[in-house]
Structure formats: C-alpha cells, structure tokens
Length: 261
Ligand SMILES: Nc1ncnc2c1ncn2[C@@H]1O[C@H](COP(=O)(O)OP(=O)(O)OP(=O)(O)O)[C@@H](O)[C@H]1O
Image 1 (cartoon, rainbow, N blue to C red):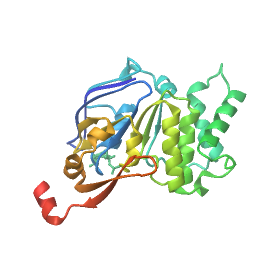
Image 2 (image 1 turned 90 degrees about the vertical axis):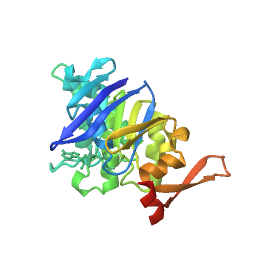
Image 3 (image 1 turned 180 degrees about the vertical axis):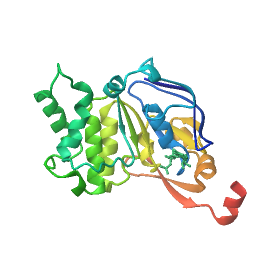
Image 4 (image 1 turned 90 degrees about the horizontal axis):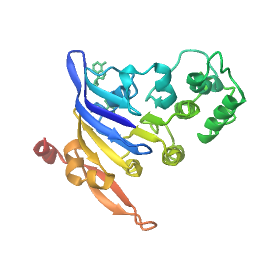
C-alpha cells in the first residue's frame, strides 16, 4: 500500500531524513518509534505528501505519490498531525465535516450519507454530544479525538497518525490504540509509549534521521537497541493475567551513558 524508496529530506541546509526505504502492506499497522527529533514526524509528513522528498520515490497504492492529485490522495490517505490547530472559529461538527471534503463536488453535494459518516466518526472516538461546541473551548485531549474523528470521516484506506495518544488520559489512550487495531486499515503511527507500540505488526526505529531497524516488536525492542537508541535499560516483566510482556524503563547511570555513546 505504501512503498518508500531511498527517501531523503533536507531543510535549512541540513539533512533531516537520510535514505529511508520501507513498504507497508495492506492492513498492516507499522509503528514508528525513536527519540525526540529522530525524524518520525518528517517521515510521516513525507508519506502523507505534505513534504516533497529531496530525493527518493514514494508510491501509494501502486501510484507515484508526486503524480497524484491532492483530492485522490485525500480519498486514500488521512493524516492526524501531532498539533493541528486552527484559529478559525469552528464547531466540532464543522471540524469533522472537513473529513468529507474529498468526497464532495458539484455533482455529489452533502447528503445523509455524509451525516452518517460524521456521526459514526464522532461516536468511535467518544465525542458524540460535542457537535455544537466551539473548537477553541475543547481540551487538548478532546481536540485530539476530534482530529481522529475528522480522519475517520474521510473513510481512508491508509491512516498516518503522529503521536495520537499524546494528550489523552489513560482510558482514551487505550481506546484509541484499540480503535487503531480494530480499524484494520493500513496504518503508520508514531508512538513514544513503547509498551503501547507492542500492538503494532512491525516497528520501525528512527535514530538521527535514519530508519535503523524494522521488524516485529518482540524482535526489535531488544535491551541492546533500547540502550543504544533511547539510553535506557529495561527490566522485562510478565503480566500474570495473560502472560504478556511489559517493559519497565530505567535510566542508564552516568558512567554507562558515557560508555554507550
Ligand atoms: N523545517 C525544518 N527546518 C529545520 N529543521 C527541521 C525542520 N523540520 C524538522 N526539523 C528538524 O528535524 C529533526 C526531526 O524532526 P521530527 O519532527 O521529524 O522529529 P520527531 O522524531 O517527530 O520528534 P518528536 O518525537 O520530538 O516529535 C529535528 O531535529 C527537527 O528540529
């Protein structure tokens, strides 16, 4: 569904992303992890067509992304940015209705079907009842859930999510991660919570603008990699209720940090 070949991106005279290649299969959930500033958002914005690669090639559903019309991209792909703000005075319903834009034109005006998509999207993120609220009066977590509803209303085949659980309380973090798993869409999701990242089919690890590892979570999140990339050591615990693996993170002491880098 997504094929990136040797993607690079430069800004301010500096290489931000270096030769990154990856494919994401139909229905796969790929998690992107990595320290602050490692290039996760940059890679997502390139995959969404919001940034133009300095070099390399991108395909979406078998078509070169740079030759697709914006409207065709938006029918296939929805992007939930980390901090999408608006200064316009809009209601929650207006914000979610924007997700229907790629499907509307003079011959296909707003219909009851669009109403249904908007209502369904709001319900899936637990924001039904907020339709008439002004966007600016929402809390950070409520805004985040409305953004996800807008993306769902777009009825995409591919979802790109940049740290979607950032502002959410633990209940809503878990329900958004469950939603991502239930959607069965092709998904690329940047995450900081490495335990939450375990639900992904594969993880890509970004470090200093490079994709340095890609594979199933259990094989990727090794103590060696976590120490090298995140400068933490882990204690692995087993949840007795279901046998699942949980990681507890501890800082490396000063001496170890000096040695590791
Ligand atoms: N337009 C730009 N001009 C210069 N540098 C940029 C630009 N955009 C991003 N960067 C730099 O590129 C690096 C990667 O940024 P990016 O936002 O992709 O990281 P990230 O992994 O998503 O980080 P975080 O986890 O903090 O969100 C950072 O050092 C950032 O400062």
